[in-house]
Image (cartoon, rainbow, N blue to C red; front, side, top):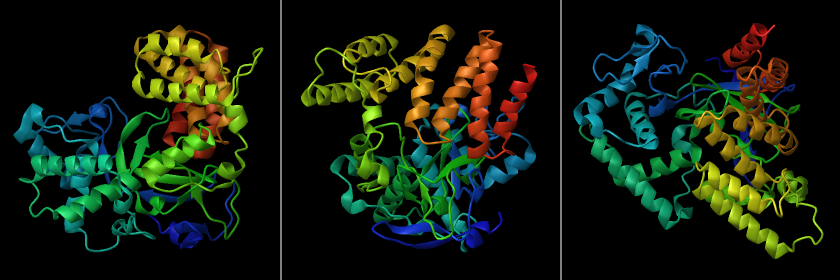
Length: 426
């Protein structure tokens, strides 16, 4: 990987935020700010057989590892490239058989440990920030997080102690798991489906804002950071750590719980989008604040507990619809879950109906060039085409493409795939 991050951007002490990343030169919307290869990565188990274990390429003619029969590769080069990491799992999977079931985080940490054992110099993923410099926030973890950390450490010992000589001591493992949990990334495809987990140290250097000026996408196991607003020399580069659909207090709660800080960005101080995100249905007697707060609590509980149940989603929408408008973010979340269930059940018309209700409010609530909006247009466009609604399908795919060309870059293979889909309909 080129050292472009070193001459395009610089590390600095950001006021009230600690370390940060600052632009050295100007960046236009859609321009690549920098790229960062993964320090370590792991393909999620559910995508084995559909994606290459080494480069994450999606293809149908993959061949499997001759030993464990569970890892799949594009070719011999990919298999050889992955072997330094895969040999660790290959031996363990053969030894445990069907009982091999470490979490994705445990698998990722095991690979990090293996890489640290053989790496003596700064890697291409650490041009500005070393992995060992990651914040762990151990002093801020509650008992629940501490228990989860200990469970992960126990699983690491159980599945890997016979295959990794000289595991770090308990204190070092506790810190490493905490660092990965705070600084790890989820690699996603063009529809935001989960492909795997990874650590990208230089990407982790960026601080959070609910009005980010860059977006992170993935080309295989390389993270690409692109400008979604014009960035001037000297300006700090901000990424978003969370889903930005929700109102201020909800976002702050998520950030404090996962990343241990209270956001003070412009969007959080002005709350400029909260009114639209929390739109209340226009009825004779408007509900009071307590009724609204009670409904928000109800919505959060339902979203957390009943993600897969279409009937519950529909009943919940009916109940919340008595107060919340269809553009309210909690109504949108329930519709999104219902759309997912419809897709799972192959109820294409039902999924299309939900997608149509969701996509415009998404465009209003999310920032420009949001992957969530692009993903919804993609899903909707492909549903239209599958239901022989060609004109609507092509229109939706073009809207997705306009966002993806900025967020992913015009040369990304996801962009090429969507262009090919559009071309095939002409």
